[in-house]
Length: 420
Image 1: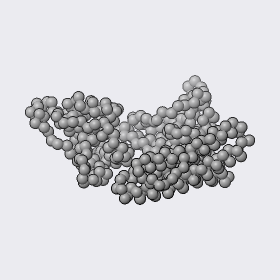
Image 2 (image 1 turned 135 degrees about the vertical axis):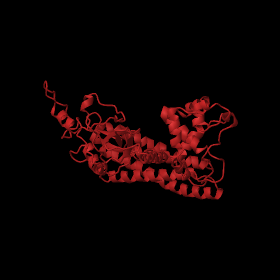
Image 3 (image 1 turned 180 degrees about the vertical axis):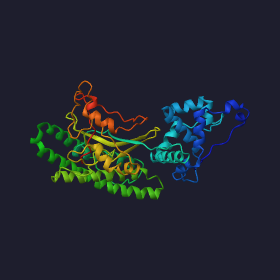
Image 4 (image 1 turned 90 degrees about the vertical axis):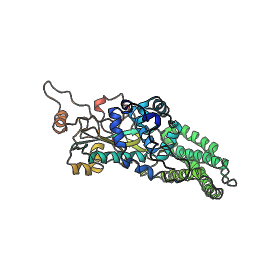
């Protein structure tokens, strides 16, 4: 059951001197902002239960999350610091004799609310800043970078084997809680793993082993299809049992999501075995559906798997970071010029902003080191940059990536778009 506000001041706080009840300047300003009712609206649409144990007060949870992100604290450290600090207790609306929420309670509530809540809260904060005329930005700087995903290098056989393993483990968990006891799902992980190892050993021979690799991949895909068919029947039976027994269907819903991902992997494996080597919107991970292959143009690592992230900042220091879907690149179109036209072109045209050519961005796809300037004459790239560079006070923080040792840091060009 949703509880928005905390209990008022206790008797012990009412008798304290006024100097002790005042918050520091920063926390006082933040406390006034968070009292706005618009920051409670996103919680009302997500926590709709009218019965059950009351939740942690939303205004307390909101202020705890502010302290966590403001000072970079973990959940356990945050709860300890709030327990020991009278000022932070006052800010979080926790009474002197009240109990600070448990770290596990905060983690479960954060996971239940989801990452979309943070975007809605940020949107409300920006709207409030515009209403109070705090934000009057006329200059905007946009940049794009590549953030590598935490996945292994994908292969069709590896993805099929991973799908078999995940479906088998999840089916065992469903049967362990008493759902679908008569449904049968055969464990094919040993058979699939043997063929995956044989395929890895055949890759050493290069192109001479393509026929063997395709044959082993087809055998793995066939076993994955059998597992998918059995898992579909098990999911239907388990959902019916859960409805009759009135138990949670969370595991069944998770199995259905895994089945959807496995079917997508099997569909693209069939296309590849049929001779189609270029597959649009290829899925490269079962656990991270947004990851895409991105061509980096580096001899050491020609392709990375991750996301294109667009970062925008203003002169006042307001920053926005969004993940964008990787697109298929053109012949010689640098990533920054393509993003300017497709993703940020509408905003830049409305605000009449011009994105300058960066110093390390050349007309060709191949990255060249800048020429050595003569005494008293700057290089041509510097002259072009100086004419178009806007004067922004706020720095642009970008996610750091490990750069190669074969090129200097200033000669690393922007990452090209993804190939799918």
